[in-house]
Length: 45
Image (cartoon, rainbow, N blue to C red; front, side, top):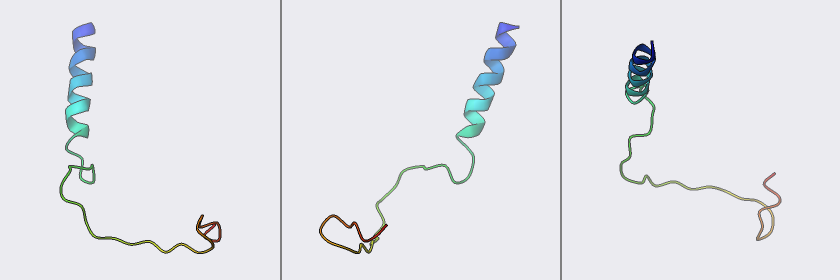
């Protein structure tokens, strides 16, 4: 029974690594953000 549970856990962990949308690393992309308000950006909220 423990062997079956270990196998299922291993299968689940390997399946999670192949789900599209999971971060796979890579180069940084150029981006920007706009903040409103003083130097602490309090006007953004």
